[in-house]
Amino acid sequence: MRMMIEKAIVGQQHIIIHPFGQIGSDLQEALHTAIAARFGVNAIIGEQLPLPARSYSSERQQYRSTEFLKELTARKHEDKQTGLGVTAVDLFVPKLNFVFGEASSVDQVAVLSIARLDPRFYGEPKDGAILERRAITEAVHELGHVFGLAHCGQKECVMWFSNTLLETDRKRSEFCAQCARKIKLPSGR
Image (cartoon, rainbow, N blue to C red; front, side, top):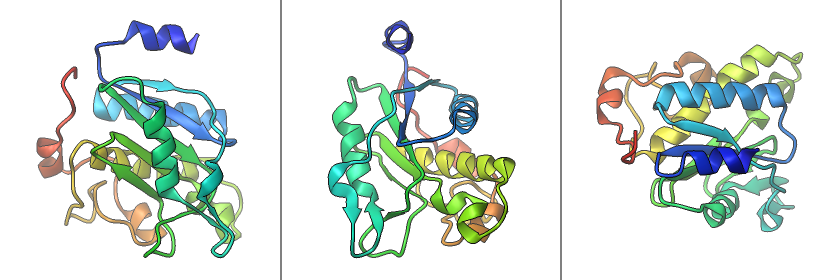
């Protein structure tokens, strides 16, 4: 069925959301709906992918986010396709303790980790609504980078750089007026 959907929208910009490992269907659907609405593009829930084999660092007990981007780039079929990976494992880049996500505007791909967005990571009770809100915020942030936006100086803007979970919770999942004017979606929107 998904292949039929993909073929039906060839020629239009679309974002394919690939879960890496197990991601709840409710969260996938919430991301799908929010991304389609925020960016005005077709969003598709793609196939579940395995964690990239070379991504795990036993020294850090985390996964290199760049390896997820490489996997998504290798799976792209056309220029008007953007890949968003979602994983429950903890991600990092070499110079930072962790990242909520990473994006490549050149390759039109991004990855998002829900590990540190989940209240259970901090010993708190499960809260699907909080996790969903945080995941949508960070997914929109990473896709904003894919489509050419830099970090924003307005603390409530989705493009504000979140160095902590408190900053993610403070910002909205929408672009400020200035970022909304700047965003450059590929043609087909």
